[in-house]
Length: 299
Image (cartoon, rainbow, N blue to C red; front, side):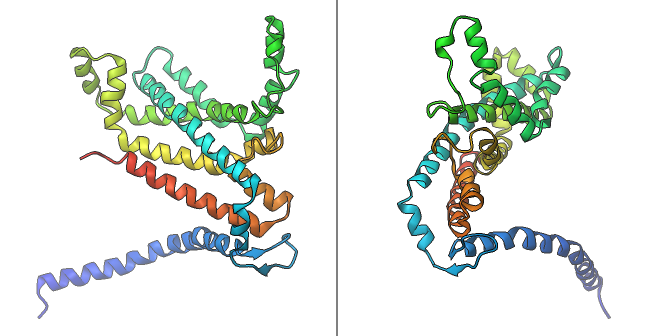
């Protein structure tokens, strides 16, 4: 005779067997569309492949050896580091403070939310066209400088080696700060108002409430947003560079993600492009681990 505990254990095993069929499609999807392309990237990086319809040959680590002496690669590598060092330290604190402000529901906060979220609704092509008009030699910025008698400061913003990459980063910040602020505001809106009210009664100003109270509460969430923005900057900025500067002038605005695209589709060096992609992937993994370590919850 089977006792009650045995019957319960048998029922649990049957339920688990039934549930296993529910996660199988997800595992298949993840394996086919995530693990598969990653493995393909590593394999293609070992090939000499001069075009999608051309014959390829196995060359081992030759593509990685070529990277060591490639000045363009090192320029792109430096630009990617500069991009991270400039964009994230500006975007995250600014967005967090804006998010805190929105979470306090000041007058007009609904309209401000719409304004801040609008850049996220503009397509990349439309955004790039808009900023091409703004930063063109006869565009809005230079025309405005001429109008106020500061024409000497006019410059071809997207064609100058000293301003092209900075302009790209400025556009990234314009598009990212508002959207990220909305995410932070949504998280901070879930914090009990009594916490901030008690801090205000104790004499804490807004600055202290932001960094001594709100930030520790949302520390892990800030880490998640930092990882997402880090991934976007490293992987997602290629399209913006392609449409605004095409990596120029020279290679002054080329970063690693754009170099992967340019090497594969413009230069038709597919194997070499994937070697660059492997390096980029390793940098992103290391960056994610560092961010996760930095923003982990304190005991």
